[in-house]
Length: 213
Image: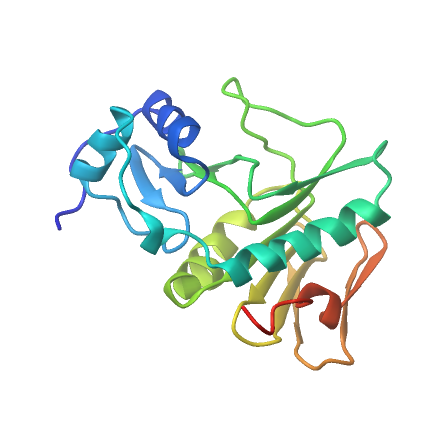
C-alpha cells in the first residue's frame, strides 16, 4: 500500500468525515487515520470521496475504546453545568495552527466553554480539557505529537491520556503559559481530579464495564 502524495483541501476532508465518520484527522493537506496518525492511501481516499463503501474496520476504535469514551463523557455530562460547559465524545473538530500550518484533531473526549470560539470552517479553537484513549498504534501520536500540539492551545488547561489495556492515566495540567505538571494515576484507589471544572473521576468509573471487552 502506498501513502498519499496528493494535497487534499479542507472541503475534501469534511466530505470524507461526513460520509465515513470521525475516523480521520487533517494535517496541512494530508488526511490521516485518527487512531494512529498514519497518512491514508490515495486509493482509499478516492473511494471515500466518491462515497464508495469500503472496509476500514482495522483502523477504527475498539469496543473497549468506545466504552471508555462513554464512561468519561457520561460522568462529565452528569456533573457539569450545561449553562457553563459542553462535553463532546469523539465528535468535535479542534483547529491547531503549528508554524502557520493547520491541523484538525478530533479528541476522544473534550470539554469546552458553552460559548465556542470557531474558525470560519466551524472548527473549535477554545477547548478546556481534552482526553485521548491510547491504543497500541497511537502511543507515539498521543504521548508525543498530540501532547506537543495541544499545549499550543492557549485555552487548554488539562490533557489526559488514558491507557486502553491497563488502568493507567497521565494527567497534564497547565500552571503557566509555558509550564505544565504531569501526574500518573494507576491504582484502583486513585482518582482523577479535574480542577478546571471541579470534577473527580474514580479510576473504576473510567474503566467500568471494560473487563469483558
